[in-house]
Every structure is written in C-alpha cells, then in structure tokens.
Image (tube, rainbow, N blue to C red; front, side, top):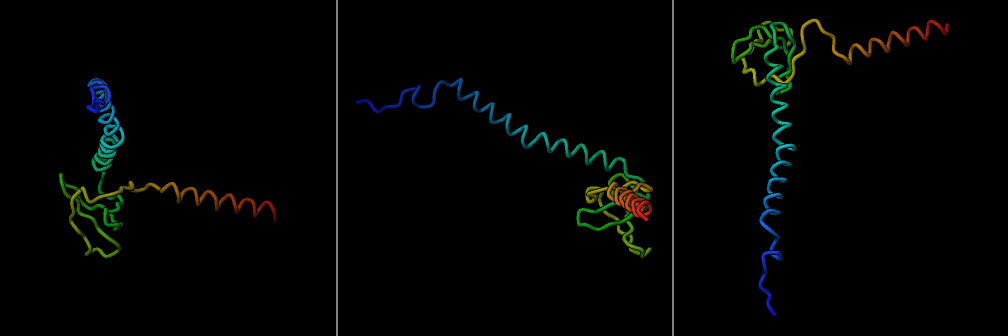
Amino acid sequence: MNFALTGSAAGGSPVVMIVWIVAMIALIYFMMIRPQKKEQKRMNAMLASMEVGDSVVTTSGFYGVLLDITDEDVIVEFGNNKNCRIPMRKAAIAQVEKAGTVSVQAASKTEDKKADEKKADEEA
C-alpha cells in the first residue's frame, strides 16, 4: 500500500489553489478595505464642508460650536462659557451639524406634536 499523497489528493491542481487565494483576497477587499475607504471619503467630505458657526460633536463626545478653522486645526467653544475655547485637530471631529439647520429627529417630533394638537382640536 502506498500512503504517499499524490498531487490530486494533496489539494488539487495549482490552478484551484490560485483561484481560492484570489477569492479570499477579493473577499477581504469587499468586506474590509472597500467599506473603510468609503467611510474615509465621507469623513473627508464632512471635514471639508465645515464652516464657522457649525455645531460639532468631538470623538470624545463633547458638543461645541466652531469658532475658527485652519488647515489642520479648529477652535471649538464648549458650553455657554465664552472662556472654554479649545483648539483641536480636525480629526477629532466626529459629527457636524450645519448652523441654522434643524435635526431630522427634532423636526419629526415637532410635526408629531402639531398633528396631536390638531386631533385634540378636532375632537373638542
């Protein structure tokens, strides 16, 4: 009895192995690298569209208003205290809400409240 593994018993032809390697690389690309690049583009677009007066949330969870913007840094004012102005990197900004815009959740709550008031008036 010959227990030595032949080429076909050891894993098939080299073409099948190359196809598996290419398939794994493609899977890694579509599951990990591509979504990361998409998120990076979204963050870069958000940071590029920042303007003075916009409300921001930092990566540490602090809410503030932009006072000044340079190429790499921003100055953010936190709270109502005018003395709490902190310079930080643009990369520390996690979310931007444009000045003068109402968030979608706040707008929907206002519309729901108005609809409830109409129903109460109609029933009375």
